Image 1 (tube, rainbow, N blue to C red):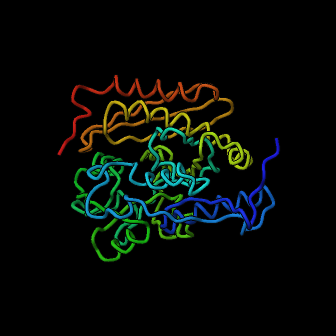
Image 2: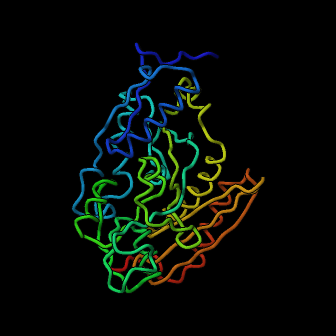
Image 3: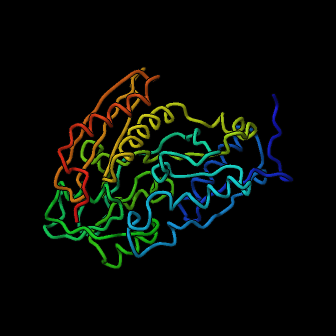
Amino acid sequence: MTHALPSPAQPLRIGTRGSPLALAQAHETRDRLMAAHELPEDAFEIVVIKVTGDRIQDRSLREAGGKGLFTREIEEALLDGSIDIAVHSTKDMPTLQPDGLVLDCYLPREDVRDAFLSDVAGGLADLPPGAVVGSSSLRRRAQLIHRRPDLVVVEFRGNVQTRLQKLRDGVAGATFLAMAGLNRLGLAHLARSAIEPDDMLPAVGQGAIGIERRAGDARVAALLDPIHHAQTGLRLAAERAMLRVLDGSCQTPIAGLALVEGGQIRLRGEVLRPDGSEAIQLEGSAGSGDAVALGEDLARRLLAAAPSGFFDWQR
């Protein structure tokens, strides 16, 4: 069945947040669709949607309501037909989509590592005792304190540019960002170092752009099919399955990374006490056809390995 392609008269509307990084990801999606279907730029329209998460700067996302703060308004626009697809940072996505929406298209994954940014140190080990580190990520905060309990960690909200300005203003001596975001913005040179996953396991979905659509929209599904990166999809299936099971049982710092090696998927997962006092990391592997089962199994093993009270909030 042949579906009508977007055109300047009827452009495909791409919904996105308005931050420079979000726009870069929307433009990458548009450019890949242009190349796949030999379409002009004006066959697409970038639609910027203000989301609650970008307006909240005075408290942590956990206190404000969690990951859905970055997706709710965009998903509402998708459901009411105001946009045709939504482009997201996968690590910001809840593990379950609203009824009527699916997330089944991923672009090739970028660098998964965390970037260390500082004007006073070249790496985490170089920070002096008592140094102030800014981060809004519950995962990064717990991992940091677990490794360096002598450091002081403060809340650090805002987009990439806002956080860089806070660093210049001396609000903190160091911070972390995703290498993928810096690469996409042409700012990789700002990282003093990149932290290897063996030293600091990244967030589930880090470095991956996910494209959401309406479940019954066969035309859009056909448009997206040529730009979907199957290996990234397998990796995210395992990681997000793990997160889904863990999220159903606790609200705690979680990290995970899947790699495809031959016909096998290897998944590492980590859960930490929110105060960083304890961390549990396990791994497993399975055939590529069992990505979801692998993620669910590893999550159950992590839950079983955690002592009583591990998932209680620590202040």
